[in-house]
Amino acid sequence: MAFYRLLFLCLFLALRVEAAPLPELDRLVRENNLLKSEHQLAKTPQVYVLFDLVEKEIFIKARGTVVKELSIDSLRIWGASIQVKPMTLLKKDALIEPERKEIKPAKEGEETSSELQVLQVGDMPARYRLSFDGTLWLYVRPKAEGTLSTLLNVLSSLKSYLIIKPLGTLWYALRGESFTEIVIYLSENDARSLYWAFQEGYGCTVWSE
Amino acid sequence: MNETVCPPQEPQPQPSGGSKKRFLKIAGLVALSIWLSILAAGYVIGWRASKAQDMQSTEPKPGSSKVLKSENAVLKKRLQVLGPRGLYIIIDTADNVLYLKEGIKTSLKATVSAGSGSLLIEPSGTRRWIFDTPRGEFKVESKFVKPAWVKPDWAFIEEGKPIPKNPKDRVELGMLGDYALGFGDGYFIHGTLYTRLLGKNITHGCVRVGDEDLKILYQAATLGTKVLIF
Image (cartoon, rainbow over all chains, first blue to last red; front, side, top):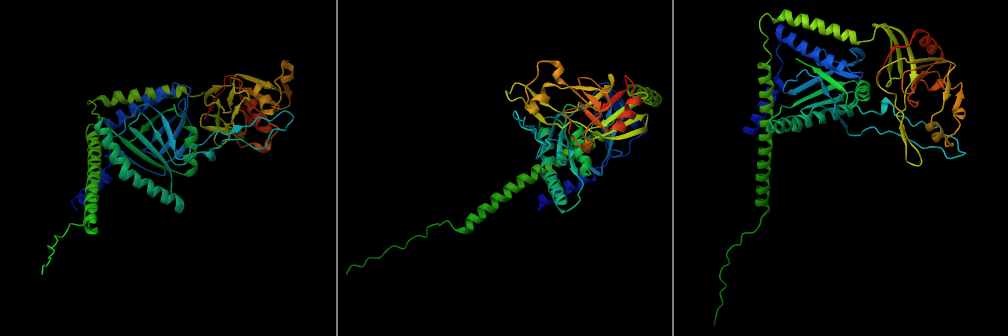
């Protein structure tokens, strides 16, 4: 019984962790870090992503210009606070990853196949994990719209609360590192669009309080 | 009369279902306790980490507010300078939409077709092509009226035809529409005969645009106009 009490106490405390409003100077320092990070990312011709967890927006940008804006429906942050710095997307993981379709060349004298061998945004997953420098894991999930997605989100949350958060934290703590898990819920289309636009090797920065 | 008396047998301890159950119950409880301890340890460490970093938040020196404000203003300006000036083109390859913009004002929104993302492997296995539209920042490098398509090797391989030796045999007229804007590495924004496929990822990497939108784009864009593709 004591264990259950301890567990519920820990869960309660974990859920109660909320960032206090930052004082003005601290905010300016963080804004400074954000601008420096973004400047570093915008200096390259590559597309990059800015996760604004304060305003619940995701900005896909190139050269400092917003090319697409996605709204975050809701989010959860766990663990060490996120440093505002340029990061690189190392890996995207999904249960079913999209595969390129192979064009079968026509044989001599044959007509080219009229079947379209294409990869569209609709083929992208809406539920996936983005890994950055190893200690930050960002999960993207579609907001629940229907029984199946609600059930999958409940299962994902259980996995997060019972496995990822405690084990991830413990594992990284044993290695002397901090661990952060972010879960963001987007509309299904936006989740797929983000998967499409945010390629491995691209830069990003996360802005959170 | 001899009477044989069997000594009373001592009751043998028999593995009963009860003790097995008890053992499993204890093992389960131990496993659960270990698991819950790990959970609790993880949560406590995570909670302390988030609290510790909140308290450790940067403490700027008094009076540095002005310095930071001016530094931030400079950084914002530097970011603005990096962005495109004047007209620029944004191509969303996921939604197959092209925007012609100036600042935040959009003067054209066109449905286009971007790369199919398909893979073509030469039957001999020596060469392979991935038909993606390149992403990132580019600029208009060339402009053509009534462009001719010089078919690359992959077009012949896909059609199952031999690759011609004479370069003239590669030229095909009318395939690219009335105008073409080159943005580097052989990629173009051009017209199409297959207007019903606009809005789909169907091309070999170029960006196909409908006739009317292409005309507007051709007239507006100049050499050097920035093209942002994502």
